[in-house]
Amino acid sequence: MWSSHPIAVLQGDWVSAEQRAAAQKLIAYLRDKPEQQRALALGFRPANPEVPVLSTDGTGPFKNAEAFGVRVDLGSVVEPPPGPVIRNLMELWSRQVGR
Image 1: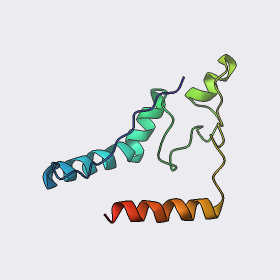
Image 2 (image 1 turned 120 degrees about the horizontal axis):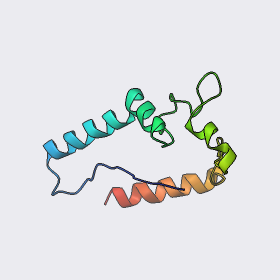
Image 3 (image 1 turned 60 degrees about the vertical axis):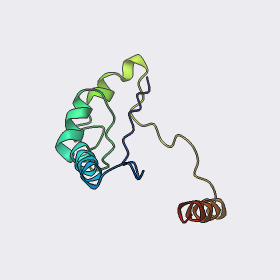
Image 4 (image 1 turned 135 degrees about the vertical axis):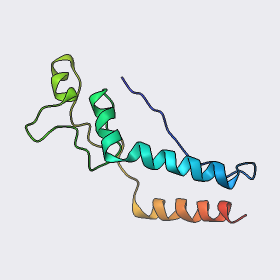
């Protein structure tokens, strides 16, 4: 089952500097290794690459659920686009942000 709860710092002119700083502190807290390990124990895949899905002995909540069809290694969800496509996307983004 997919569970996606993205977090972002909004850049609107209605977002105060204090709100932006608070959001950045929250993101840093959520991405911190101890919190990612806690999330893993609750069944969420870690967003922090320093937190492995499996422990050093090869166990973990996802390994325990493998018998029920849960995949430990998801691999890439999609193939990354070719370099020229990424360059063009970045150029288009820069043009929009610069407005």
